[in-house]
Length: 157
Image 1 (cartoon, rainbow, N blue to C red):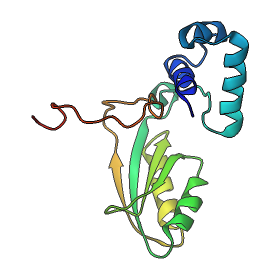
Image 2 (spheres, one colour; image 1 turned 90 degrees about the vertical axis):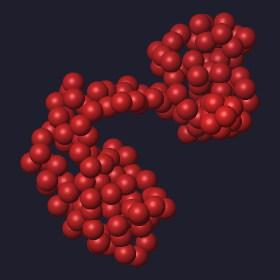
Image 3 (tube, rainbow, N blue to C red; image 1 turned 30 degrees about the horizontal axis):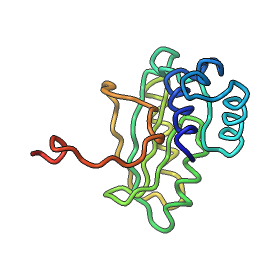
């Protein structure tokens, strides 16, 4: 991916409905060239353009991260849990949990049901549920900038 594609993605991360003409002006390409690049980025799976909702505003008052310890292949457990409709994010980790799953539910009863179903998946040894009490930061503006070298403030100097 070149710098122009990264710049196009950054434009769309700011506003997924931004017109191609405005993106073209910002990145120095024609509108047709931007349209073609966006289509290639979509077709290749490098990016998606989606509507991001606030779960609290659409009736999902309970969110949690469930840490899962497994026996056997954590990838198999992660695949099974990824099929749950209430689970919107699953990662395999190398920490104290083998799998982390973000769960979005309407209420505590639904969360209890989902956690029970997670515990029932073959290979799940234990779970630990972390309820979300507030959101301090959520961003999707990543993946376009290359690694940055630490500044003196990052290094504590």
